[in-house]
Image (cartoon, rainbow over all chains, first blue to last red; front, side, top):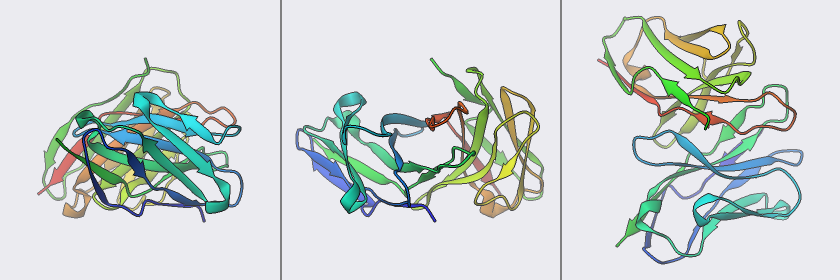
Length: 114
Length: 114
């Protein structure tokens, strides 16, 4: 069965520091992978997605993610974190059937120190 | 811009009440989804619909039902609300084209059952 693991429940970084949020997936075929962000009190917003091709994907707000098939990972990175990046981040994998469902990880809450 | 709206941001209901959560999207999306979000569990799919009057159970359908009478509207129904259904409920929609999994989310409804 497909699954997504985000091993870090909380991460705290200082403003201006680099960030990496981990995501591992379990899926038999080539996955469709996503990162979403949820600001407090808001719905989810798509940061970036990987379907095929270049394994380094650029997203909005200066985020990028790298697909590594050998490690079954899709880690999210940002070179310099801003205070406004404090939010919860969800990794998701697309289920390749007629439902087009997404399987979400449990989320990582990012706290930013001033 | 895609817009997914949910009828209430906050809702307080009593145990045993019948509860309706409404979701409307304005992008002519075929697929619509209802998730519940709980701390540490991420998003779990309750029900989804890929066409008018069509519905499919997700991972946690017990205690819920849905209705989709019009393409743009997808309702989640709690037949007899219980305290363990206190949660954040998120609606999402997407196109039903091959390989398209990007889901657009509403702001969520925080339901408290007392």
